[in-house]
Length: 79
Image (cartoon, rainbow, N blue to C red; front, side, top):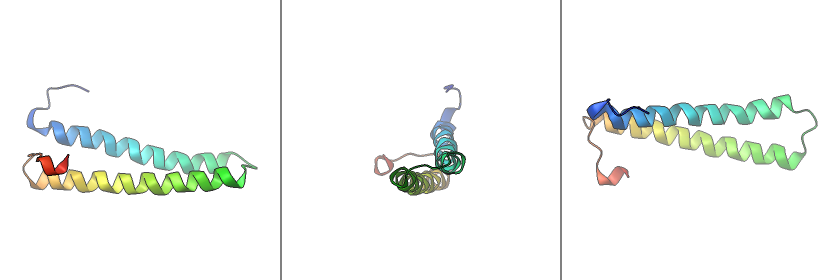
């Protein structure tokens, strides 16, 4: 990641994290759909990961909204 984003750097970092959490979330579904005969314990584990990654994705979006509303000020409370 480049460091020339200035005061928008916190948003750039969160934007990158939001993208990857969404990708990971989708990949759990892709694996389940592509791998036929996947053992039930792996299907369950992938569903649990999907739920965890979905929640993480939503948390990152909440951080983005908070940083945006604060005028790009990242307080210690967010860390």
